[in-house]
Image (cartoon, rainbow, N blue to C red; front, side, top):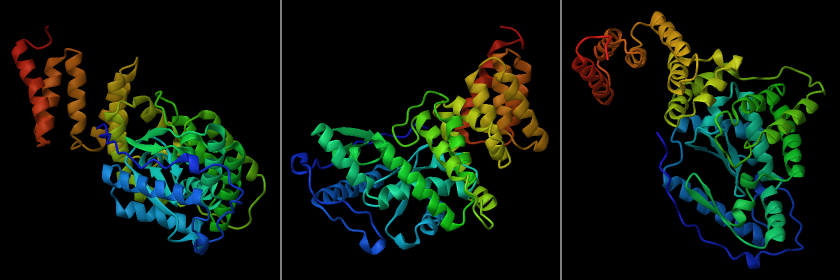
Length: 386
């Protein structure tokens, strides 16, 4: 289902009062030092607070306290001295994305969480975004943007507009190469200190690169372009040339157990959004295949069926058949097989599949849809004829 876009008007702060300053912008040392030190920072924080509030009211926040708390635990492990100051928030968006705001809010799309395979990989993303906050890249970016343009602009994020300086000071335009490299380097150090397996870091971005742009979907933030992803991989591969002593944690099983239901939800949203190529690309990742649920596998079949390219129907039927061999009660497969048979004008077979589906007592909305097909078949008279 396409998410409803709700538009809010945020207060526009006068950029004319935010020109060049001689105040040195210093990184945060720890949680106790987290406060706006300049007028420009105060204005950025106020804008960020308003965006937080607008996103909450818009219904774009993914409401799952268990998952949110799990992401927060990872962040607190990476940044123990900033506990309570860096807050992870989840967005209802299947697009692979994450970004940091200058007030310590770290937003991560559920699509990105579902696309990764273990805790070390998601920690790589959170560590990177956390550095953007602790090093005050937002404030530095704002000054650069103001000096370059001297004007504000509004940019929409999930239907909620960033205004002027806040857009410039977040990941929406991407940070400078210098800031991104710093976030990679210092984020890597956070992974090491937290005991995560840093060999998983480049894998995280390789997963994202594989799916990124698969169906032409545009994303304006950190993971928006192949060059940005390729640079992340290059940086972490270089960091990993130095061997880190001691056992390192991947966190595979705990991560898979925490995100299993989320993956089903995200795949369903991608099917509804028509992002079939992205789904098929994601299932090419060997590690993710190990955590497939029958429902996930079904959505792969749906992606093939709905995409409809050469060979796709055969792939879809193979998946549905495998699911039914493993569990004859996996009745959603009957509905999809019935649709394929119907379109092939094999009405007898289609009728059989549809009746098996209806015998399972499906959701009434879906049942109405299937009964409509059966009515058309009955009105055709003789099966297998036009």
